[in-house]
Length: 113
Length: 114
Image 1 (tube, each protein chain N blue to C red):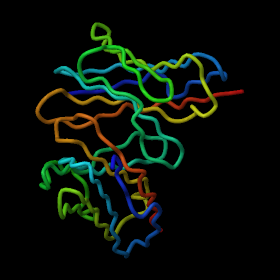
Image 2 (cartoon, each protein chain N blue to C red):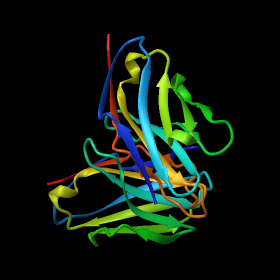
Image 3 (cartoon, each protein chain N blue to C red):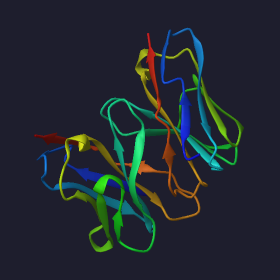
Image 4 (cartoon, chains in turn yellow, cyan):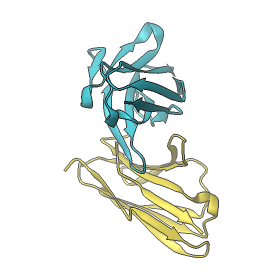
């Protein structure tokens, strides 16, 4: 299995809702990432988990809450989002945190209304 | 610190013509270099990567790139463009060190006309 699977593919949520994005990989990778991508822009790093511990938080607002239940799963919990948070959210994994060979999922298209 | 500059936010070619997408990087240590492609409403797909060894790297879909340390470049080429190559292309760099994350360029949209 050489894929990163993200669910759901599309999500529409209100500003008072709570929702979660899920990411799963079975490649034995020990580093996992959340990126945010706005239209016509490159992906921006949000969080890095290395060996199931949060190692980087790029000053992301607390309405985004990451969770890594085990080495194969990565969640992003969403609460009280704003319309400007609408974007493509990409999950990625890599063998370790050494910057070598990221594999990306197909993303979750989030719309906040 | 590391950074990537992609020259040209849009590149237009005719079908069958040479594709050249330019990427220059800055890195304080030996870099890992990547090219990703993104089709509309999809994730990023790895085209090719340079880590160590041979400086001419061949990737999927007929693309290749050459790492030129003296020019700090990693340009992407394809001899003959196909309509299906139309997409956004991102060059990215990470550092060949114990801990690093991926830094992307701003992307180049490749347009292919018949």
